Image 1 (cartoon, rainbow, N blue to C red):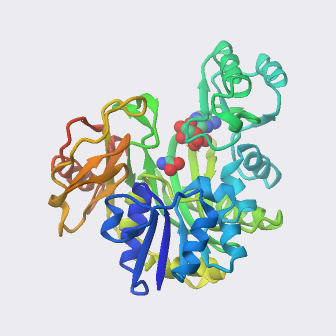
Image 2: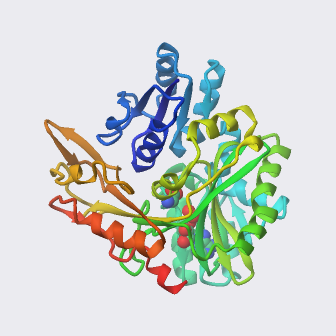
Length: 423
Ligand code: AMP
Ligand code: GLY
């Protein structure tokens, strides 16, 4: 079969690598793709938001399944456009992708269906938000309602900071129209865990757990980023935690969406906080995490196309989803200065060191071809992943492999997976 993947980051590279192993797949296209994805797929120069062009391409090339990697096209309704053309596509429709697209929607859904999450209020005007803050406890969390590249969340320690935050989000529109509405919620403490799952509308099968590191600097200092590294599984995600979440969070979310007439098919990514009062939902995403996919997919045993087709067809209950009994760590190699200002176009050396090394992977996030060279082309450049028999071994292997690659402004965190030592 022929598969089209929509997206261009490290997540889509990990998806393409996994799809390339499927017995069912003869040919992969990726739009727009990147220099690493080009190893497995023919990259097509169509943007992820050009729905009509993508659908026309899928028709002409007789694509059997299109996989949407990114949040923006999903929230924008790409799946509806493909379905209207009779094309098979993996991902939620617009009315279900709202689970990620609107934080106010997701909070109201959780409240209505008693799914554990932080206490909150939604606001559509700055005056009421300001008035609410006067009697609220700090620290407090402000969230722009819509998609904001993972940057629309402000944790405020004082009333003054919180008022400034409301001004930025609702009046200055720092995150654009994402700030037309906002959520103000209780600050929670605990370990964070990401649990990704396959969903077919009624059945949910969760994948192995992972943990991300969102801040730019060692010791969780510096600005928030798209993610500087991940490990999988999380040692804090115990059997008891899993049982609680299966019962009170995962299936209830799928059932809630179905009850609302918003049947969800695709990936639900549960961002969880393991609080002293039990696990609670921080956020939902409607796609694989980046860089969670880079540690979860290398550990997945199943043929990913069989699982995705079961989601589309509503037969996920027949799939026995399995993961290897090992661990993986991903360290992001970024351009020094990310996420603010950084140089691009620098030649990358050492990529060939990963060829035919079992259990070591280099997933491209921001790279491009420049003549015979592959050069840096973004803030997050590469995700170096290694597997190991346990988390400590995987971490040691990943940090070895980080040294195989070099470019002039290479920057990475040195403490990815440090939490493992506290488990
Ligand atoms: P989100 O995009 O909702 O996952 O938020 C981004 C990050 O902000 C999360 O990964 C948490 O580290 C933090 N965060 C979000 N909501 C809360 C909360 N209610 N309490 C504490 N931290 C939070
Ligand atoms: N790594 C977090 C995300 O993909 O949203």
